[in-house]
Image (cartoon, rainbow, N blue to C red; front, side, top):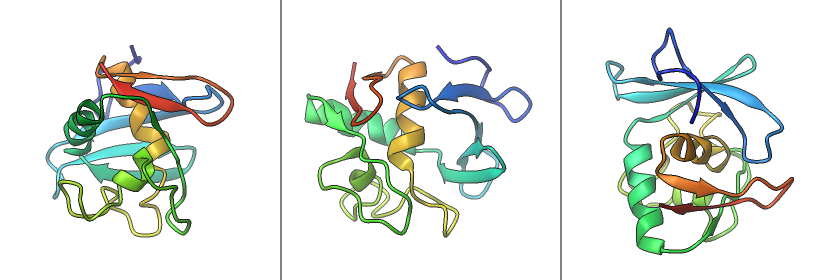
Length: 135
């Protein structure tokens, strides 16, 4: 479980799948649209709040381990990865879950540890090429 309660004043404290970086996230249901706010050093990323439930449903439908495939916005993600799904016109949002232009990527890096912390998914913790599956 992550430290914190997921509010702006008490954000979740998370680690990337390899455990190499710590970052914080919190839910901002009052923003338009409702968002997950991810703070990585001095960089703020924002994702649709619905990403957590939508990603969990998609992972459950897959019924297997899925590569994370994290990539920044300017790079194409590997097909079939969490990152590719987070940008796909076939996902429930019909495209990007990232809200901040120029910083919409890294969905596959920062969302999976939150799902794991919430008990929704299992995540591998290798130096590279990590995977996730719904539980």
